[in-house]
Image (tube, rainbow, N blue to C red):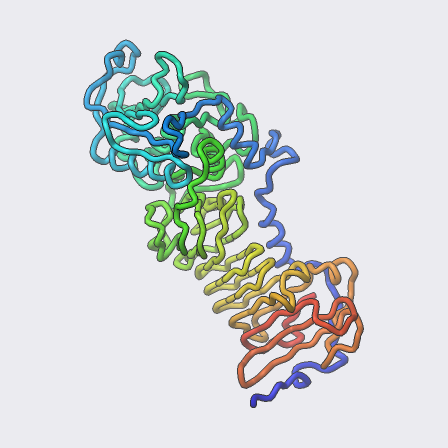
Length: 485
């Protein structure tokens, strides 16, 4: 039987005086609220919630009708081989067919919309609830592409999307993962499905800028339907000198298309990994090296899911809460979680990472580097990895006797357990008194450690009832000097 050596760790006279919330908690709290929406103005514009932004993308009221009432919008599509009869009368210049590369990328863009909503696409000359067409034009009219909203009216051209290719503009000839050509395809298909721009502007009509945006989140950090740089909302999709773009619908687009046609919960309903070691089977969700460029909003139908960003060497900030943004692989705000999505686990890389869990039981791994890890609610498994790591707890409910967190690799003298933001310390300035056993006084703490199993725990009685209100367990021994209040 292993021997429990509690008294060897602390004496009954050991006590810590609260110093106020730590800088580590400050970093957690600041990042957790960096992208808060609604309420106060941002950039001099109203801040829209996800629902408000989704409604604005749908303000024109255009949508395909479910003709056979099966609960899914089924669209057929063709890649045009010749110009429509009225093509030249519309002043579109010269017609050209889609290349094989364009066709393949258009199919991937359609797939990304079908992933998130009850919409299907079938290559056929006709059929379904409506028909889409793709073609190229050459006339420089101020826009790189255009498409028609699905209004039911004579001459509406609904289902058509057109892409500019001429000697001066070649972007649409080489669409690919993360480039502007691929985002253009996704954007125009969004119009075909019924989404408008987030503001009342169009290419070729005047000289609109972000100053003309109706609301603050009208940027390419929130919607592929936007014209404006993500830099306007504090994000940065530049890496190694190159500008990158979303290849699939972003947070507000996903919310909008799901309001219109319903959410597709069959998509990735099993255990899915995003980033390194991805099994998501989508090019924009996969990373293969530290130089990979990820720009995406994740939609996931269920399962136990993981953000694996372990192969990145840059400092990262990862937040697992729905509608949150993360700084991944050297970019800022480039990964987000759509409304209604739950991601359970996050793996950081070899930089100094900051990880924020959600209310579920998370597995959070910092990896190498000096990481700051906040599990939040739920019985979390927390791995600091190598380096000096700080495990932050912001409330008693973050780790309770009923659902305690476990720090899986605690190293005394290097790692810290940070309790400084718990209100009993931060607000009430309750001293933390270490004892060998509870005696019925609020603020008493017991550190225990079993040498045989290498398991320890920190129990705190905040109410004076001689029972642990807060409990965190450790693999490895913690000392009084490792605790921050």
